[in-house]
Length: 521
Image (cartoon, rainbow, N blue to C red):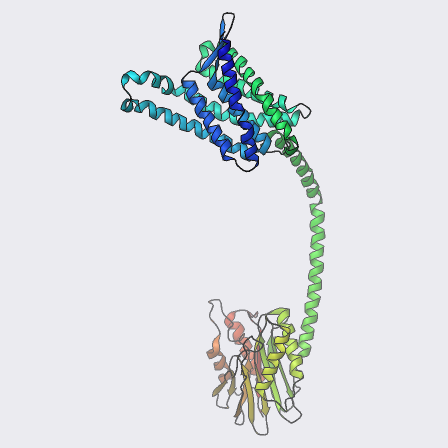
């Protein structure tokens, strides 16, 4: 036994383990690169010292046990990996594992390249050392790579498993056990596959050597970790496969019981939810019925104008309409008629319509023009809503002078129909009502001859479509008005409604429909 060689051997290993402490302290302060560089250096040292056969030996009787420096460095790398995992968790340990695998692959490529390129750089007489260091042993290399990858992950998994199960055992003993079991598996696989004929002798040597190495390496590392134990949480669960499986089993049991209880109560829950939905639907239905009644009550009563023959058609596409109309006789003997189409449908549009009705009722028609009335409506709307607007037409009819003063705020042109069915459209005189656009509302004043018919409508009647997506259109609309010019307004309304519903093959309109026909005195 050469004691001096053993002292040098174990002294070298101590020198190699000492840098791990300051490098780990640097890692804790954010400087992780030096530690990774040192791991790469250890892999290169392991490769070259193995090729150069740096070793020492112990003779016990007739058996010689060889201690290889490369195997000692290999064991040190795994101890360093475990140090990183204990101090920083699996994310940082994964980086060390990836660096180690990368070094193995690089060294193999490096070995094959240099071995095959030696003829270009060295004389044949100088090949002996090159062959010793670099000669590839393909099977041994493959076994070594497989072993390394397996061992790198096994060391971390086994350590965490022991930490979870042996909570009262000192950390140093757990580290030793995890590394010892990993190294023994490594030796059993490598020796068993590469030296089957001498397995027992070599494997016994590996047990003795790696046990000695771990006894040398683990105490200083565990002492270093113990100083920072308050900063380390070993129950973090990272790569804690066994603990996760246990927790998963408990979660599945809990989920199964919850699912079973939910299934038992599902029918009751569905029944209760159905009752709740029906109750809410009933409340909504009653509210819509009330809104419909209120809106109908706001409309003028048929036949309220004895000197003006007016007929109306009013069909909301939903329970309540976004259209509104009104007419009445003024104190000075004139009449006013108003029709409007509010943006949108349903209850919101109906509320805007109610506001317009109230604003219209507060106007002094004797002192304002038709354009000023639309402007005041627009100003009133802007105060209460910014999301709705309307198009509308207001007419001030003087039957004695046979004149009409009207203002059209962006509405579809309504019609004046003569006794010979000549149509005069009442075009827009201003922009839509209640919009963000500020513009004046002009008005026009025209004279009308006897037997003139007034036709006011919203676009829902002419834009109703059939199955081919074709609109009913203004041409068909005017054709009916011409064909039934001699009939009373109510008869004309009925015919228009009949032909529109036949055209679209439905009595349900896509938009709100309002149509007023009046024979002017």
